[in-house]
Amino acid sequence: MKLFKHFVLAAALACGLVASAQDDTQTISPYSVDFETTVSTSGDFAAAKGWGRTGTSSSQFSYRTSQGVDGSTALYSGYQSSSSPNYLVTTRLTGTASVMVKNYNDKTVVKFFKATKSAAGEYVIGEEITSTVTGEPSTTAYCTYSISGLNNEMVAIYAHYAYLDNFAATS
Image 1: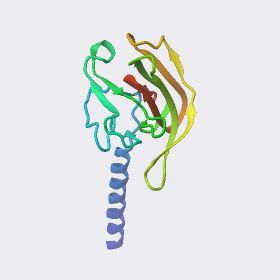
Image 2 (image 1 turned 180 degrees about the horizontal axis):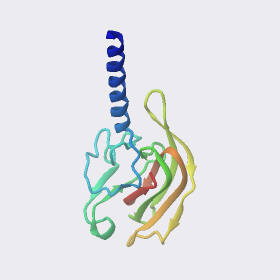
Image 3 (image 1 turned 90 degrees about the vertical axis):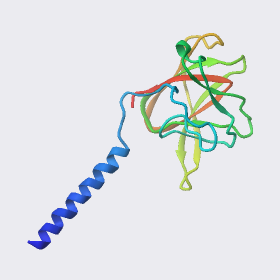
Image 4 (image 1 turned 30 degrees about the vertical axis):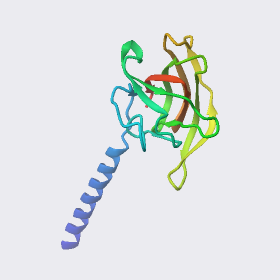
C-alpha cells in the first residue's frame, strides 16, 4: 500500500510538471503583435515575448510614436549593413503571417527568411521566404507583406529603413 501511495504521488507530481511545461508553450491563435508595448531596444532586444534578434547593433531598432497605423506606435528599423545585417526573429509560427510596412525612404527593403537555432543557441538564417505585398509600398501609407505555408517555424525579418506595425499570424 505504501508503494502505491508513492506511485500516486509521483504520478501527480509528474502531471503537474507536464502541465506547467505545457503552459509555457501554449499555441496562441490568432497571434498578433502591435508593437505598442515598448521593450528595451538595447542588449538582447526582443520585439515581443518569444522573439529575438541577430546582429550586434543595439541601435538598429527603435519605437516611433505616431508613425504606426492610424497614428499608433511602430517599430522602426534603420540602416542595415550588408556585411552584418540585424534580423528580427519571431517565435514559432504556423499558417500565414503578415506585417504592415511603411517605407522610411526610397531605399526601404523588407524580406523574410526561415530561421533556426543552433545547439549553441545562436540564430541561423536560412533560405528566403517569398512574400506577397498587398497595397503600394510608400512613405505615406502602410501596405501588407504576407508569407504563408509556415509549419511551426521561426521567421527572420530583414528590414532596412522601414516602419513595421501590426504583425499577425494564424498561430
